[in-house]
Amino acid sequence: MKSSDIMKAKVSAKGWVVIPAALRKRFCLKPGDTVEFQAKEDRITLIPEIADPVEALYGKLAGKTSLTEALLKDRAEELKHEEADLHIR
Image 1: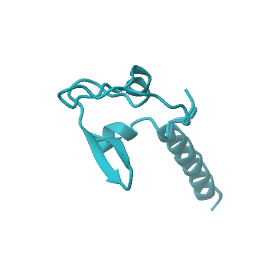
Image 2 (image 1 turned 45 degrees about the vertical axis):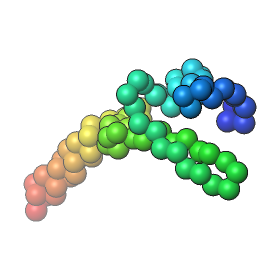
Image 3 (image 1 turned 30 degrees about the vertical axis):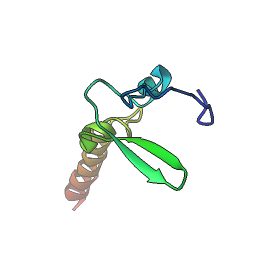
């Protein structure tokens, strides 16, 4: 789905609108989640509320190499160099 895709939904007699499944999936919306409505000029914007910002960001910076493993490897190399310097003196 492209960000420019236009989707439509009808407003029910009670004012309910169903968020299209593709958007619910894309934004990980589940029953009970909260959304925010913002009115600007002639538009209404629906913004999913992030329940736990830390949880929402979990894994976003994950790479192929563990940062912990890289740090430990780097520290082990530094320690090896420091010990070598001590033996030379």
